[in-house]
Length: 169
Image: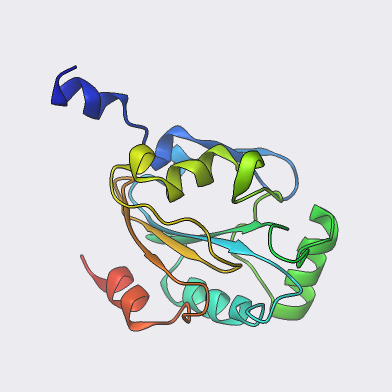
Protein backbone atom coordinates (compact mmCIF):
# COMPACT_ATOMS: atom_id res chain seq x y z
CA UNK A 1 0.00 0.00 0.00
CA UNK A 2 1.39 3.39 -0.92
CA UNK A 3 1.43 6.35 1.43
CA UNK A 4 -1.08 8.19 -0.78
CA UNK A 5 -3.61 5.35 -0.72
CA UNK A 6 -3.09 4.88 3.03
CA UNK A 7 -3.90 8.58 3.58
CA UNK A 8 -7.04 8.24 1.46
CA UNK A 9 -8.19 5.32 3.62
CA UNK A 10 -8.03 7.45 6.78
CA UNK A 11 -11.30 8.89 7.97
CA UNK A 12 -11.70 12.51 8.87
CA UNK A 13 -14.03 14.07 11.40
CA UNK A 14 -16.38 14.84 8.53
CA UNK A 15 -16.90 11.17 7.69
CA UNK A 16 -19.02 10.59 10.79
CA UNK A 17 -22.70 10.99 11.44
CA UNK A 18 -24.01 11.26 15.00
CA UNK A 19 -27.41 11.91 16.53
CA UNK A 20 -28.56 15.09 18.22
CA UNK A 21 -29.87 14.84 21.74
CA UNK A 22 -33.34 14.97 20.15
CA UNK A 23 -32.46 11.81 18.17
CA UNK A 24 -32.08 13.44 14.74
CA UNK A 25 -29.17 12.49 12.44
CA UNK A 26 -26.37 15.07 12.38
CA UNK A 27 -23.75 14.88 9.66
CA UNK A 28 -20.44 16.26 10.95
CA UNK A 29 -19.53 17.32 7.39
CA UNK A 30 -21.97 20.22 7.90
CA UNK A 31 -19.29 21.71 10.18
CA UNK A 32 -16.68 22.11 7.42
CA UNK A 33 -14.79 25.37 7.79
CA UNK A 34 -15.43 25.62 11.53
CA UNK A 35 -13.26 24.78 14.50
CA UNK A 36 -15.02 22.20 16.65
CA UNK A 37 -14.49 21.41 20.33
CA UNK A 38 -15.82 17.92 21.12
CA UNK A 39 -16.47 17.29 24.82
CA UNK A 40 -17.81 14.25 26.66
CA UNK A 41 -20.07 15.67 29.35
CA UNK A 42 -21.82 14.48 32.50
CA UNK A 43 -24.40 16.05 34.80
CA UNK A 44 -23.22 14.63 38.14
CA UNK A 45 -19.46 15.18 37.96
CA UNK A 46 -17.11 17.50 39.79
CA UNK A 47 -16.32 19.01 36.37
CA UNK A 48 -20.00 19.67 35.54
CA UNK A 49 -19.61 23.43 36.20
CA UNK A 50 -17.46 23.48 33.04
CA UNK A 51 -20.78 23.67 31.18
CA UNK A 52 -20.86 27.38 32.14
CA UNK A 53 -17.38 28.00 30.70
CA UNK A 54 -18.22 26.04 27.55
CA UNK A 55 -21.34 28.17 27.07
CA UNK A 56 -19.29 31.36 27.57
CA UNK A 57 -16.85 30.20 24.86
CA UNK A 58 -19.69 29.36 22.51
CA UNK A 59 -21.37 32.73 23.02
CA UNK A 60 -18.10 34.57 22.46
CA UNK A 61 -16.72 32.66 19.44
CA UNK A 62 -19.59 30.67 17.92
CA UNK A 63 -21.44 29.57 16.00
CA UNK A 64 -20.22 30.88 12.60
CA UNK A 65 -16.56 29.78 12.89
CA UNK A 66 -16.55 27.77 16.13
CA UNK A 67 -18.84 25.07 17.50
CA UNK A 68 -18.90 22.99 20.66
CA UNK A 69 -20.44 19.54 20.54
CA UNK A 70 -21.43 18.03 23.89
CA UNK A 71 -21.61 14.24 24.05
CA UNK A 72 -23.20 12.97 27.26
CA UNK A 73 -21.56 9.75 28.43
CA UNK A 74 -22.12 7.52 31.45
CA UNK A 75 -18.71 5.82 31.39
CA UNK A 76 -17.31 7.20 34.64
CA UNK A 77 -18.92 6.26 37.96
CA UNK A 78 -22.43 6.55 36.45
CA UNK A 79 -22.18 10.34 36.47
CA UNK A 80 -24.56 10.72 33.51
CA UNK A 81 -27.48 8.43 34.41
CA UNK A 82 -30.26 10.46 32.79
CA UNK A 83 -32.13 10.07 29.54
CA UNK A 84 -31.39 12.42 26.65
CA UNK A 85 -34.47 14.45 27.59
CA UNK A 86 -33.39 14.72 31.25
CA UNK A 87 -29.85 15.70 30.22
CA UNK A 88 -31.10 18.42 27.87
CA UNK A 89 -33.40 19.81 30.57
CA UNK A 90 -30.55 19.80 33.11
CA UNK A 91 -28.12 21.60 30.76
CA UNK A 92 -30.65 24.19 29.69
CA UNK A 93 -32.07 24.99 33.13
CA UNK A 94 -28.81 24.93 35.10
CA UNK A 95 -26.29 26.29 32.59
CA UNK A 96 -28.29 27.88 29.76
CA UNK A 97 -26.55 25.62 27.24
CA UNK A 98 -27.18 26.68 23.64
CA UNK A 99 -24.32 24.79 21.94
CA UNK A 100 -25.33 21.57 20.19
CA UNK A 101 -25.81 18.57 22.44
CA UNK A 102 -25.69 15.09 20.98
CA UNK A 103 -27.29 11.84 22.08
CA UNK A 104 -25.78 9.94 24.98
CA UNK A 105 -22.96 7.64 23.84
CA UNK A 106 -20.09 5.53 25.15
CA UNK A 107 -16.64 7.12 24.98
CA UNK A 108 -14.52 4.11 25.95
CA UNK A 109 -14.44 0.34 26.21
CA UNK A 110 -16.10 -2.31 24.07
CA UNK A 111 -19.12 -0.11 23.34
CA UNK A 112 -17.14 2.99 22.30
CA UNK A 113 -18.90 5.13 19.70
CA UNK A 114 -17.13 5.14 16.29
CA UNK A 115 -16.47 8.90 16.52
CA UNK A 116 -14.73 8.44 19.86
CA UNK A 117 -12.81 5.47 18.52
CA UNK A 118 -11.46 7.86 15.87
CA UNK A 119 -10.82 10.69 18.36
CA UNK A 120 -8.89 8.51 20.80
CA UNK A 121 -6.79 6.32 18.49
CA UNK A 122 -3.74 7.52 16.54
CA UNK A 123 -4.22 4.55 14.24
CA UNK A 124 -7.62 6.01 13.33
CA UNK A 125 -7.00 9.79 13.44
CA UNK A 126 -3.32 9.82 12.40
CA UNK A 127 -2.42 12.36 15.10
CA UNK A 128 -2.50 11.08 18.67
CA UNK A 129 -3.64 8.43 21.10
CA UNK A 130 -5.84 10.13 23.67
CA UNK A 131 -8.05 7.66 25.52
CA UNK A 132 -10.78 9.42 27.46
CA UNK A 133 -9.66 9.57 31.09
CA UNK A 134 -12.75 11.24 32.62
CA UNK A 135 -15.74 13.45 31.88
CA UNK A 136 -15.09 16.77 30.11
CA UNK A 137 -12.07 15.72 28.03
CA UNK A 138 -11.87 18.18 25.15
CA UNK A 139 -10.84 17.38 21.56
CA UNK A 140 -9.94 20.17 19.14
CA UNK A 141 -10.84 19.69 15.48
CA UNK A 142 -9.63 22.25 12.93
CA UNK A 143 -11.55 23.76 10.00
CA UNK A 144 -10.44 20.85 7.78
CA UNK A 145 -11.74 18.08 10.02
CA UNK A 146 -8.31 17.21 11.44
CA UNK A 147 -7.77 16.44 15.11
CA UNK A 148 -5.20 18.97 16.31
CA UNK A 149 -5.11 18.40 20.04
CA UNK A 150 -6.71 17.38 23.30
CA UNK A 151 -7.19 19.13 26.62
CA UNK A 152 -7.47 17.14 29.84
CA UNK A 153 -10.79 16.82 31.70
CA UNK A 154 -9.71 18.94 34.66
CA UNK A 155 -8.41 21.80 32.50
CA UNK A 156 -10.72 24.74 31.98
CA UNK A 157 -12.50 25.08 28.64
CA UNK A 158 -11.20 28.66 28.80
CA UNK A 159 -7.58 27.49 29.13
CA UNK A 160 -4.87 29.34 27.24
CA UNK A 161 -4.42 26.32 24.95
CA UNK A 162 -8.06 26.37 23.84
CA UNK A 163 -8.37 30.18 23.58
CA UNK A 164 -5.14 30.42 21.54
CA UNK A 165 -6.37 27.65 19.24
CA UNK A 166 -9.77 29.28 18.70
CA UNK A 167 -8.22 32.69 18.03
CA UNK A 168 -5.49 31.39 15.70
CA UNK A 169 -6.05 31.76 11.99
